[in-house]
Length: 116
Image (tube, rainbow, N blue to C red; front, top):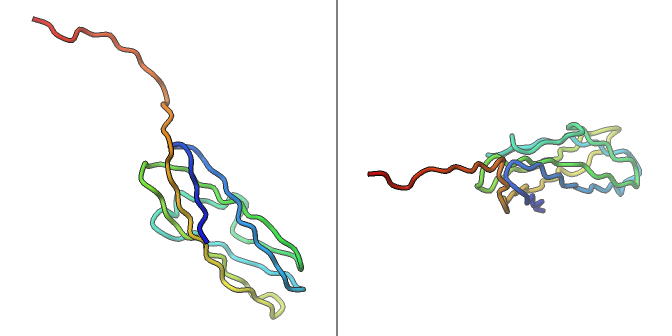
């Protein structure tokens, strides 16, 4: 599964990953961001995710672009064993693309093009 982040340079983009728990007991995941550009991605609500029985939950993943090149990372959700129940480890590929650049400021300069 790939989650794509597109936006302007230096903008923060938020995407949601929806998780479902089909079992009759709580599932608890520890979320980890790994990869070359993992520092550009974040989990604003923390690294622990608890999903109640027969429920679903969305987790927010934020990305702030610092460079024009595409950024890549992997979101790993590692299940903790709670009461003998453990879910499968989940992996999501995170990729970004800078679609446009907005200027921070515009300066007008006036100078002669040529002098003798």
